[in-house]
Every structure is written in structure tokens, then in C-alpha cells.
Length: 366
Image 1 (tube, one colour):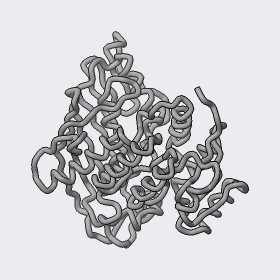
Image 2 (spheres, rainbow, N blue to C red):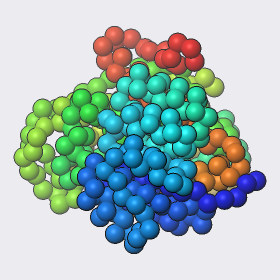
Image 3 (cartoon, rainbow, N blue to C red):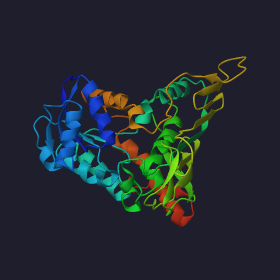
């Protein structure tokens, strides 16, 4: 194992970047040596917020990539520029942390995949819920056989996304955000894949998708604010706020996943896993492994019950990625794996047009 320090360039200085910076600062094998953003003032503000007096700030990614001692680029920009950022970082030979969603189209996704493979760099995509304590507990229960053989998984992302979120101006537009499933529902798709696989550090391969889109909010200006529990007028969402998909996996497991940007309620992330020896509903377990069980066993753990990025386990993701670099191994959540999650997003879009099930993988040479 080669242990060394890694110099980190954080590109993008918005809400999510704060958590990446903090996670790298907490890792003894990483230093944030540079920050870049479209506006130099934003990069400097982020550096000042974390006392990074030694970090150099840039308003150009190309210039920042030439900074001495940069080993890792952390892409924290809006989703519609992720592709160009990743292509530049890969061409510069840097390892890459990629915020989700990784790309806005299949063409972008595959171009990124090709560039990373050609450069021989390592990646991790920020499906950080894989490091949530409840997720880790569920995966260990599945891996140790407490549920028997899993045959069905259901996951949902339920959050009235709107102007309360700083990224909403880009996030509400079809051209820059694509869909509710792309913006945030991809977290639920990734969770579906994660729990549908039997091994602790494995996600299942989807082979078929059928989906519906609907809701009542698209194009309407009157919207709810779940933070203040009030209503306001704002520019409308340009895509359907509700998407529901059925997914069949290569191992025979069936899944149901949804994203709901229209639910007037606090954020929730429901999880249900069904096996032939037990079931899980969020943090409650019923299993044949416990003879005489009279009620659900409740696990007192941290659940994915907030959309605030400060609640998300970025530390686990970053520590994992640094460990992968030190051990020269690929992450279970690298770009190749994340392509499989994103393909469900784009298969759903195809299904809305064809009204037919869509077979995966979508890439011809996969």
C-alpha cells in the first residue's frame, strides 16, 4: 500500500462544495491546495470560510488544473457542466470526485467514461448515501443472510424541491436539469441497485425499465416551501415532478423506484427490502433469524431523513476514495458503476416516448 498526501482541487464553490472541502480537511492524507469557480470571489469566500490561507483560488478550471501538486479534482459544479469539467480533469491526468448527477445525457456520460478509461484515472461519483449508517446496516444484514434471498426492493425520493434550494434556477429547467429523476431521484435509483445486490459492496445490474411520469406541478408558478411551510410564486419547473419506474435486475430481483417533487410534506427517503427470510422497512427489521419475534426490531441509527447536504455522509465517501487511491483499487461507486444508475434515468425518458419497456445496458458496446 502506498501512503501519501493527495493535493485536492475543488471546482465549484456552492452549497455542496462546503461538505467536500470539510471532508478532505478531515482526512489526514489530503490537502485542499486550490479552489476554482466561475467567479473568483466565490472561490475566495469558500477558502476563507474554512481558513484555507494556503489554497490558491482561480476563476478558470484550465488554469487551476495546471496548479502544482493537484492529484484529485472534485467536481462540484452544476450538473450541466459536469461533462466538460470531467473531460478536462481526465485529460490532465487527475483522479476525479464527481457530484451527482454525473451527466445530462447518454452522450455526455459515455464521453466521460471513455475519457476516464483512456486517462487511467480513478473516480468516485457522489452517491454518498452508500455511506449512510442505515444503508450500511441494511447491506450488512443482506450480506449476512438475515433477509435470506432478496427478491424485491422499493425506494423513493420524496422532497418538494423548489426555490428554497440555491441551485433551483438551473435545477428547474429541462435543458440544464433534464428531469426530477436526474436531479435527485438518481439517489433512489442508486439505493435500489445497492439493496438489490447480495454482497456488501456490490450494486445490482439493471436489465429492463418501464416508467411513467406525471404529477400536477409542471409549468405552475405557485409553489410550496417545506422549510418555512409557506407558499410563494416563482419561475415554474419545466419537467414532470413525479416519476415512477419498475426495474428488473440481472439477478432476478425486481425493484420499484420513484421521485416526487410535488409532495407537500418534509423530505423523506422510504426504503423497503423483501427477502424470503425477512423484510426491512426503513430502520425496522423482521427476520426469521430471530425465532419468537413479536414486533419489528427498530435499529437506532442515522437515517437518510434530510436533504441538507450537511446531513449527508461525504466523509465516508472521501475517506473511501482516498483509501482506494492508496491501495490502487477501483471504488464500488466509480463512474463505470454510476453509468448503470444513470442509464435507468435515461431509459425512463425513452420509455415516456415509446410507451414500451427499455432494455439495458443502453450502450451498444457495453
